Image 1 (cartoon, rainbow, N blue to C red):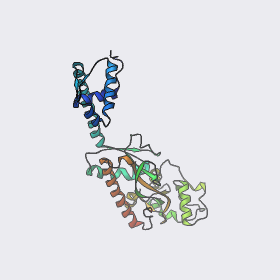
Image 2: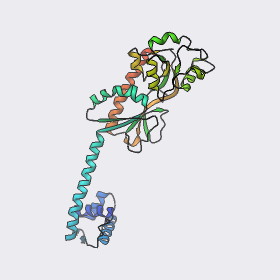
Image 3: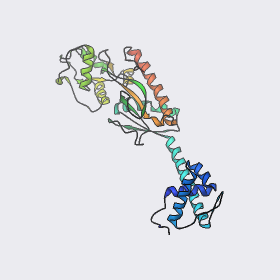
Length: 313
């Protein structure tokens, strides 16, 4: 007797449904990529679990019993609906792209350009997550990420976009107050904004043998784009990326306070699960993003010809 609180084995139901639909254990085995003996085992297990004979066995074929015909009709209908639901879900997934990235890159560089991606691929719905911490791409929540680092993340395919570089940036009206910037021990008219470790790297690249004193720094912000916003407002000299903030430089809201561009050796990368490298939506985004990154690099190198080039293969 069938216990209505517990379904029989799903594997047995699947084997039975395939055998009933194609009329043969051997043909069902070929469809399920298994053996006829395995199909026969699962069908017998199902018959034992339900207490019903579902097939009459003949020498070269099997024949459904009356009970088997009833179960087969419902099982075939159920599996057809299940297959249709997976197909529908695949269609929905193919048209929705979810990307996670750092707040500064997402706010200052990627978001202003997303209109061009939507114009090129209007059928793909785009979702953007901004997080200072790298999100797990194996969880299925996100399709891809734009990350900063060395590009060596296990299980992920990566495409280099542009170098992680930084230089002092300020509002044009504040440029005259930056005359003593090259001396880390001087007391400048404007406070320093941004990460102290970037300022230390920048001064080392400049050849200075010491780092700026803590009292030279102004307000501490949680993200690079906030440092830049404060610099644009005339509140200090921000250490920021001329690549990410090229639009502000081109628009005249920012100017380099010193021509030296430094780097921490890292780069920005598009990353996504290696097993999904052929996914259409990821391929579309990868092609568009690489075009945008190349355009941004060409434009900023006209102003900063000493900008570091691509990493060695």
